[in-house]
Length: 533
Image 1 (tube, helix red, strand yellow):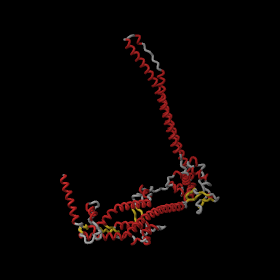
Image 2 (image 1 turned 90 degrees about the horizontal axis):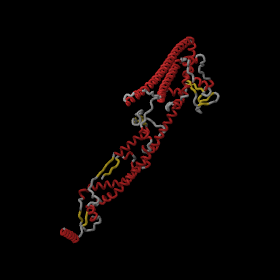
Image 3 (image 1 turned 180 degrees about the vertical axis):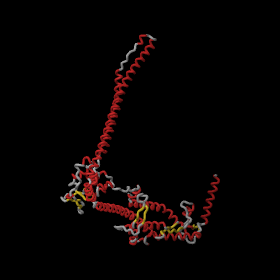
Image 4 (image 1 turned 60 degrees about the horizontal axis):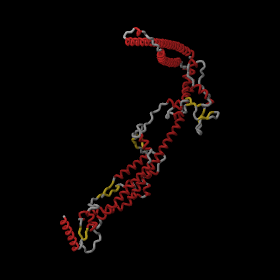
């Protein structure tokens, strides 16, 4: 038998008074949480089991103190002061137990001889120590109950606190990140000049469809120009962009100030200085490409015509071969039949007449079948040639495109912004938030790889800690009830066997005549049994 007690009180105040418990560090942490967590005593935590992208994070003061307090309590719960004593006990249902139940008594009459069944002197020290443990257990039973209640309350409180505070911390972190991103996006919009997409719809649509082809744009190209009256300005109160006429929009058309105010004017002025020389170069390039394309189309047309003629010739030869084959086959059949008839008539001259076999129906059927196969081959070949010509035409069109660098250098950026504006819906989920800065910015930005999150992370986040604590306490209550039921009988027998005065180990001596009669009755029974045997 052993008595175990917590050596250091579990880190709680002595007596486990409710008022004192409220001042305990762990209870203060579980009932009060700071709005802003300090970081004077940070602690590095390994998180590689949750994410390979973030294998270590810093745990700040609040959760760090709570975890250290729980570790202290856990250590104290394992640091026990154990006092034990060993005593021989009479087992339930044994002969000794039945003997003591029948003959032992604690009410001994006066002047009656007593026989000591057990030698108590040998175990007096152990019995005394057991009694001390028993008295100590009884004296601590009240504090033990209080301590158990404190631990149960602590389990529920910590579970609820960690669940609520973790959820609030995740929500607040998401909100901080979201709001900081909104501020960042507004800051990133500062280098752009913003225009109303409604007032400048026609000009934006024109630059979106511009392909900067020299052959089409050299005479009719007009530089991309947005009117100053279409400029919009951000309203801090409404979060909208407002134009001079009072119209508002949430997604203005933005052109970077560097391109609009510096690059475009500089390019236009530089291009005007040597326009004549560039026109000569453009015209020379155009003449060269036209010559190449004419030769290209001529060769492609010759190739197509020659292959078509050759395919027609091949088909004609195949049809002629088929007709010759059918005629030769019919002649062979006629000769075969004549030979068979001569063999059967034993050389009669009448049987040597050759019957002409007319199988025009079979010939026509075979011809139609082969004609279909020829037509199928011819159709496949013509389809292939059409695809080949379409591909050649597409490549020729791309080759014939002459980049009009005068317009491309000046308005190429505006064209890319206009095209990206129509492609916002096609962006992936990670790029779409960047579209609020500028669609082209969202389209061409280089993003880091997506973070790696393990499945165990979502499992731990979805845990319901208060429910887990409640279930654990219910299971503990059931175990305590079962132990209490099983320990009632053993505790009563132990108390009976180890009373303070040791009377249980004494037996009252009965009168001698009665004892002799009992022995005589036993002897008679034994002799009768022997005779029967």
